[in-house]
Amino acid sequence: MLSREEAKQKLGKRIERCSGCYGAFYLRDMWLGPEATYYCEECKTGEMFHFDQFTEKLDLENLPTMQEDEEEKTQCQNPFTHQN
Ligand SMILES: [Zn+2]
Image (cartoon, rainbow, N blue to C red; front, side, top):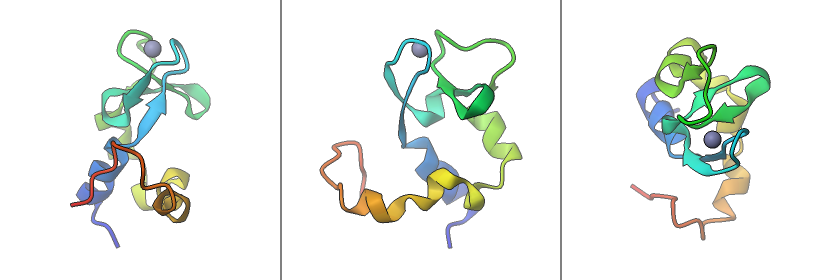
């Protein structure tokens, strides 16, 4: 079981695509928009929550994105995946 801080670190290293400009960013540098879309700093609006904010509010262990590990392990070629 991950601690809250570990879950946050792990989630922050995920790569997500900005729904505005379609660039790829680390989730920790993104803002959560409506309907679970993510936006970069350039595309965010004032209504969105930064990673640091929404991770404070969410139950990280129950996030759907945290339950995709089984798939992720089979794709370890991702250069952004850090094995600590
Ligand atoms: Zn963007």
